[in-house]
Length: 432
Image (cartoon, rainbow, N blue to C red):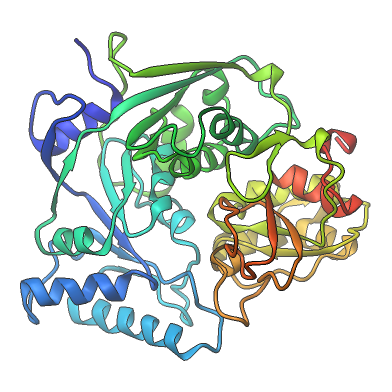
């Protein structure tokens, strides 16, 4: 009996020839990521359990990325960043992306691949549920709590149960108006927010192989919205071109065996997909965008690890070029690299920045998570009152983007931009 890609990666990390779903195994961790929200707690547990003078398992294997509550006057947020800064200095960490310095990058889930920390065949854990994003690079990547992360800090290992795998096969041609966000929202709408609980969600097929790394990241990012332990896409030439441009460290590509065992499989014809949105207040409350015109919006938000990559802004700019927004439209590039791309990438001779300015969008905020997680009162883009916001982010629970009275509608950058023009949920095919 063959193994899935997830099982193969975990077997390799456990020093074993094979593992099977349901087994509990020790794995060697390649990369541990933490940030300013969970980092201080993780560091405190590490020092309590391993000693004040303990050293982390690898100065190169720990990546510290403050990103969630950076551009704020909130002193508690500043304290968290100071704690991260002190720990990075004390431990001599190689990779600390320090706010307020030239090394600052932005959102951890986009920083990690851009800085070359994502490599096929490796094991990555992070103190953030959306660490599953990095399965897009053919690696096992999963979110964990502070206690597990502290144990990894001290030992470089973690005891985990091998997840069973669900396979989602997308064949055919992806229409021009469909993005990775539409594809993963369709999956979540079909199986529910608990349909993949502690499963490896594996995405494959010709349509998946045709996607950019940005869209693959979006798909794996939201595996957790279905309860998944990890999302994963086997590495191919698209993956290798991205990874080799950003790191020269060795890695091993793995893929599922033809006779690998799955507990479920769902097939999609990409040609038949339509733009969809997730209505309040759950990521599985999915409906076709064309059926939701009764939903008026007060604001649009384009940003986050899910929807703040350069390709996401390019898509939004395609819709917005030559048009005006009817509602406040907030822009938050995920990283400094993406922010630079907004002034570099062009459509018809205009930069994305120029297109957004001409459309009447609010000038982009500095790179960070910003309003995706709500944040302090002065967070850029934070919802207030009973506003309805259409957003490229990944969660729409009550209060997720600020006010508990607000409503968040999840959508692709295409759909968010089209809706910003009309002032209500709008199918982007009206403009493409």
